[in-house]
Structure formats: C-alpha cells, structure tokens
Image: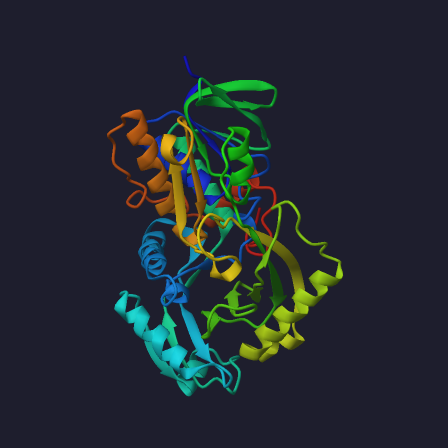
Length: 404
C-alpha cells in the first residue's frame, strides 16, 4: 500500500505545475519543497514572459514553445503576468544583419513582429537611447513568479494535492531496483512514482536514487533599479549576451543577466564581494546603453539565480540548450522515477504536461491534460498575494510588486 500515487520533489514552477496537472487527472499527489515555493530558480529569475524572439535564430523549436505558452499564460494566469509587449532595439554597435535575421526568423515561426523606425520606437518608449537605430515589437511580457507558483499550488490543492513546504527530502528509497518513495521529515512516504523536478538540484536528487543526471548550472545576476518606468520589455538585438534585457516593473526595471558556469547550485557569489560589484556595474552600463536613465537610478535590490541547464548535451553556458529534457523509465533513468531538467519559466506548463504524460503512461492513467484550458485562481491580485504569503518565502524577482 502506498501513501500517495505520485511524489513531486521540487516546488518551483515546473514542480508545482506538474503537481497541478497530475492532480487534475485524478491522481493523489504530494509535493515536497525544501523551502518556500519558488525559492530556487523560479523566484530568482528576471521574470520575462518570452515571446520566443530571443531564441528564434538559435533554437527555433524552443522559440515555438515560448510563443505557444505565452498565449496560453495570457489566457489562464490572470494577475500572475503583465501582458505587455517587448522591443528588440538595434544600437550602433549591433550587426544590422542580425536584426534582419532575427526579425525574419520570428515571422517564419509565427511570432508577431512589427518593425519600427527609431522615432516610432522612441514614441513608444521616450526613455530609449537617442542612438537607437530601429526596433521591432513582439509580444513579450512579464511574469510575477511567486504569484504564478502560488496560483498553481492553490489549483493543485483544490484538486486534492498536498503541498509540503519547508520539507527537504532526506533520501530516495530504492527497492529491487525501483524507486518506491522518499524519506522526509523523519518519515518514509511511499509512492507509485516519484517526479524529480528539483531544477538545478535535479542531479543531486537523482543521485539519491543511484542515478547520474549530469547538470551544468549557470548563475546570473539581476539588478532591480527604481526607474526608468517603461511599459514594454527592452531587449538588445544582438546574440544573447550579458546585460541585454530590461524587464519593467511598477516602479522601475529589472536588468539582466550574466551567465557563469558553477560547480554547485548552492554556491552563489557573495552579494557584497568583488564579483558581485563587477557584475552589477556591468548590468548598469549595459542597461544604460538602452535606457540612459538607468545610469542615474537608485539600485533597489540585487539577486542571483541559477539556471537548471542539462549538461549531457552539446554546449555550455550561453551555448547550452534552453530546451527541456524528460528522463523516465529504465532506459533513461530508474523505474519509478521521472526527472525533468532544463527549460524556461515561460514553458513551465508545457514541461509539466510532458512529465504528467510520461507518468500517466507508466501508471496506466488515460486522462488528458487540461491545464491549458482551466484558468488558474489568479484573477484577484490581493487574494493571490495572500497565497504568496502562505506558500512562498523568498521571491526577490517580484517582491516589489507582490503585497505579501
């Protein structure tokens, strides 16, 4: 006899989204998160709702996923997102051929993209640099990560899931070569299946089950400044590099980000150290190239996030795939455990659907995914922020917006 049908390890967006999806398909689900929900990568992101334009040239499949999920989240996620827009701007040092290639790739993928002259771009964003040469507009937006995970957790709970925060798992139990449950908070919890959705920590969880899932996490700094106030997301139109995104919030922007490989996801730099000071200065300089008012703005907060990149493919750092991988069964993992790695916050729901499909296939459950059609309980910002206060403990990405 098992204590639950499925255990989900990890309370970031993908883990909570998976718990919601499985619960909506009628499974009894228990989720374990060692801290508050979203306290790992999710709550320490720059909060960009990708249109797919950023990946249109290097990763067309990932870009197609982004625009698909962008449209879904605009329908279901309520106050967890700001459905604004985004501009890709070309500065004098940027390759005009890259601008043309990216614009063409967006249109080929069905990502709405409207070219703007320099004057038209500055009409939309008066704070843009005077030397912006041209731009194109895409349907980027802003995700408030803590609201998103809290809404998913509440939906999962309404469908019968159990959400256990501040409960790190201590071990994964294997019996006869099959994962049969986890040990947490001094007790053994048995399950028919375990989902490893621990993000950058997925390799460590897999190792508890005797598996080798190679991760290649990278860290990145975000710098939130008070002002300028802009409506769209601002992207530098060049190959992805440090400091080429400015994500608007109510009173300013979040500037990001760097990409530095790390050996362990729990080893971010000292926020007061030389590395942090150098990275912050770089973000301010790059941000000011697009939005000159950044140079005079006050810094509100600085925080670091770690990307859960899979290390088994080609490339490292910015060259690593931003796609996601699902390992399940005896071929790619161990019977009884499914592991999901990689991906982006924008595609969390799609990742959760892929994991839930795999788990249901293993367990003989023939129920379709409904998470793209059923709205999240996210219509009332005040009620949503009460859920954030209940579920989340560390969310620097949107602490300036959420009234928790």
